[in-house]
Image (cartoon, rainbow, N blue to C red; front, side, top):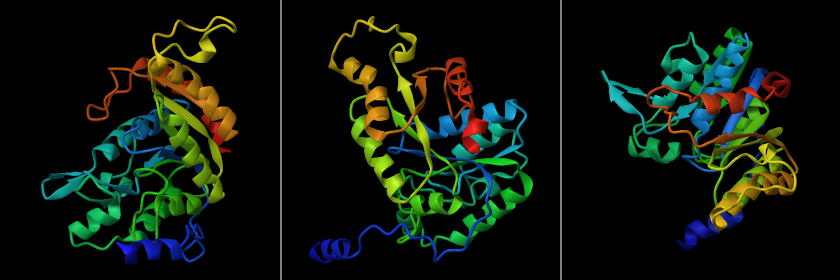
Length: 276
């Protein structure tokens, strides 16, 4: 343990990506989350669907997928299936998710458990292929920005290489201010272009729908936190809350369903302008 702590102390976070090859410049978005399980796949798919419905030639990319199932001798990513359906993708699932692992853990850990080497070139070449085919791309990261893909290459490095506006997905409840600000701080430390935050699984009437001076009757501290979190994130993080997406039972990544309330919330955002 002492050896590990010394290694960490002697190797500060390094977000320099000059050692890796340059990637093509594309219009698009890089969707990350404040944590795993916050709903970034749902939001990434909803954004891709919104862009596709507006007439954009958009593709989707899930560079690394963990927790994949085995089907006919191949690892299949449920997230990639969902994203492909949302974007009406012409790509094969293996092109959308070039690196796939069975264990639902960090990619570097999953690769080690399976006796595999993390093939970063598979990610880079997959992205180059999409750049040749599509007008824009919605990329969904794995885990959060500091999730390691390999030992020295993390999600944040990939985001820096792609140079796409970053959309941070955060859950609505207690703890999200801290998680969101930590993610924003990491993103800005790596000089990412942070477009804003999407607050997901909101259980109350969105603040913008309540007239000034007439806040809703809140039952407990949890509801107070949820109601005030979006404005706190915006003020402390110095960026926009792009959308507040409600908790919607109809949503299901496994069944490929985006509920109408979620679609409405996402469709209110001018994603083409954010992509630049």
